[in-house]
Image (cartoon, rainbow, N blue to C red; front, side, top):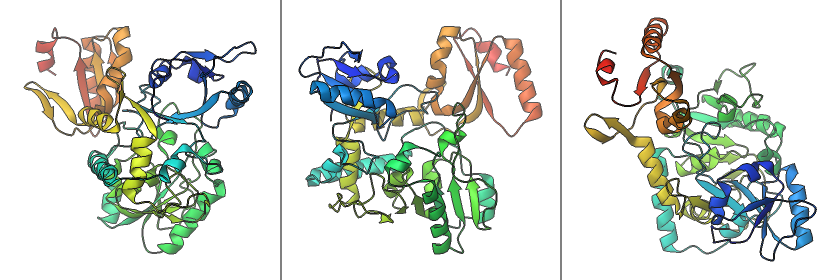
Length: 416
């Protein structure tokens, strides 16, 4: 369901949807109202809920009782400049009137699109998208990612590895993808058997690593791993990580879809949206998925047709290419005394921000984006001097930067 103009009311029982000020932008500014026993919707109104969450039952019952369309919402596959724990600016939204892409138990609008017709122009457009995405390393979340850890370079010396992708335990996409916790251990055993003499990396899910996701855990730990299996707890740059691997083992992770874009062999032990179309090595079957797709056809359905995109500047409907162009600008642009300079930047560990009032601090982290892993606000010059001295003395291996508000401290900054 694309972003067509909707003048009617959107009804929901979800507090998260009702309180999210961005949702109306994906529906041409339509009002969102709470479902109540006395609600009187108009013909043509729509009911919305988030994915297959338990709290959608009230909304589904309301939609059926009032004979209204029901849409399941989810973030799109290119969703944020940063990570949603720190970046609330959503770039895309899925609005599915049949099911939801990660639930293989029932049809979804994405499945329907995959069974549709694709022109040569569609495929050429998707090929260009694949090239852009892989050259820029664009993903669902585009926060600062680390380089491959030094221990990998020293231990493997460029040797190809096998990547096994972990997910957060209990994630709904696992059970909805016809899998469970045992699927992960079955996947690892299969990878070890197929690649007995190859280093195997188990990639920890970013939500387990990101601050603010307390209580999140994966299915693997460093305890009792076989000799050729290593736990990768760094949130690595995706292009860099993909350059180390040929085979990628997943249950339902979106990283499997992204691995296809990089030309990797993807082994699926669940039934994610990109499995069952002849592009992956599948250990499960979805009888509904009878089409055999090319990778550009899958990309066109998944990234062009399925989500609705809203440009972060102006909040107008746009195409995926406009989102990628905007992301490219954010991810590759730095500032120099001579003006804008297009160059990829390595993120510093800490950015010390001086001279920002409380209201300005709210947007600084998004402004800094991937150029710093953390932002520390400092109240005065003396405090900053002390922090920089302490930083250099205690940990010279971690780099930092300084961000100043205004020109008043320009001369003082030269002494840093």
